[in-house]
Image (cartoon, rainbow over all chains, first blue to last red):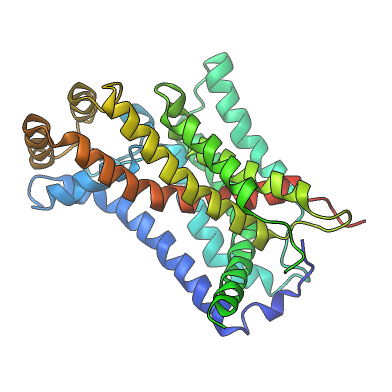
Length: 174
Length: 161
């Protein structure tokens, strides 16, 4: 990966725009998840929207009610681990600019990402191999740990992707 | 940029693997673990692309993300084609399967359940699922394919010596 100084990232208008877009999508995702219990309640009148949200997450998550958080009397449309992953990614995206101001290179070490996978891998392994359920909170925490760290890989990559796409666009249209 | 190898073949292979694993009944359930097969397809595309790079050149995260994104787009198209094929031979997306999904989801709102029931009884389910499936796949596979490409880059890119 390219060694790049972290300061160059947020002095660039394009990068700021892409970063805000990622933050918006991440927030929209959380909004869909946490608004579901409100929308699904009989009094809301937005049952159709709630149905679409539930269907949207069907291919992404097993949606087993016993393994999902209960909020205002209704389960969230994704399981506790997926909730942790999405919340973690959002938190990682929020703290990314503050963290990258303090470090020299924007890319964390590959070892950090692999270490972040260990708690979640252990949690999944305990469930599948030994049938030990560590509980919703633990699923949430291990999912969050992984995705907070993954966001530090994903955001610089997506910023670089925007560079490549713009370059390609410029080449195509002269 | 001109000297770089083509991303098309790695993306086609990654997208193909993604589509096959995401379309077959039972195996496709792996996607319930955060789109595992889509991430795998994107990661595979990034890995194959990194193999094509000249000696000593490292895979950048931008290139990994781009090849993952292209693999995701191919994967979405292939998945929809395979799913349509399964519908044609009556193998998947039968009204009974959708009804099972609706009944198992206790939180599915009644009005949505009724709408789905109407579509099912009118026989419009197949075309609805294909169009809806293609739309959803294009969104999901492009996002998760890109993330898979980034994961693949993080795992498979060689460290600078």
